[in-house]
Image (cartoon, rainbow, N blue to C red; front, side, top):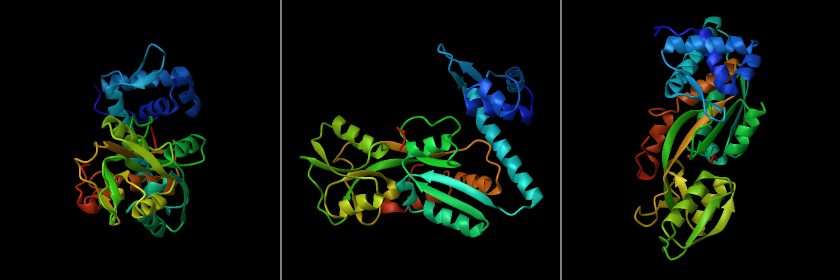
Length: 307
């Protein structure tokens, strides 16, 4: 096994992974399918392992070693872009389009983090589109976004980066009496939504009697409904605020964990786009989100349909 990976081979490997095949990767790299295939073979020789495989239906996927090499390749190429930008000493500029759901935008940290990004890089233009995770991923695929932030209770899309995991907790309005378990009145986001799915699954699993009484696409509206006593809802710990009351753990079935992450458009080369990616990566464990989550409503953060 070679100690050093050839950067050109890593570029071709990511092209195959991101474009889900050798033919599309060849078009992306302005090469031929045979050339791309040969480079993947050379990379596998350097790694000493098979990195890609096809199932019986011909669907291409990464092996365990391939997943390791993919993450390494993304890190290597990201550091190269950062080094190039610093060598050229060009100001951070360009337009970056980012899509996220309403709960991302209203979280305690992300909006302020993006605001700081705009203040730190005044020549960069940050455009934020609020939509659910599925719509953001579709817009990214169409080239309408550079970054899509989303949450998931399943596996991440190819090339996506997981930022953190959170525990889901049942909450009511802070000034509302603790509800009885005779019939749960459920407040939810519009479908599709991971929180909504997990809440319904947990109540069914626990054999609870429940009905949906309030549906909204807005986190602000959900909070208002809680304060007004419409019912209860299931939220990640980072969204639990002082106007909410976490319910006793034994009262209702555990809602599970939700993963949060982002996916970027392949080939982002603007300095603003690169720096935004660095900013998002800083939100991984031990980053700014972990510090704030541990302070929310006395919870300790333990750091998957898409919502």
